Image (cartoon, rainbow, N blue to C red; front, top):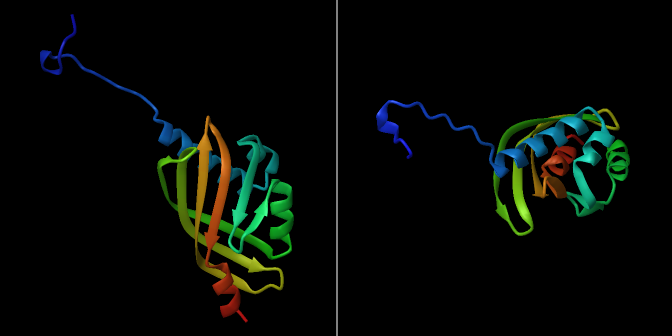
Length: 143
């Protein structure tokens, strides 16, 4: 026999959703790359995962992605402002929005630059990352 909520019993439900797990995975990946812990970030990615950034640059390893970024930026920090997850072809898509601050390799600073990352998550691993930002506009404005 099953009691209902009106019979004085307390019902507590604790459950994680796939969306919450996917958001946590994206957050943990961003934290690991922010610490420059590429091994930890790579461990969260499925074999064959890619990173595609603004301008159509595609990277099959985080080391190649980091080397590309090192040639453009002296340093930067991503501030995450919002995380959203939804169903997508191939898994769950996690969208993360925020702002960037830092400096280009020539020392010119930038701040409050908008960015958005899309993580595709399947079976608990990141299979694809796409990222967009207004850094090109910031670079043009800083000249």
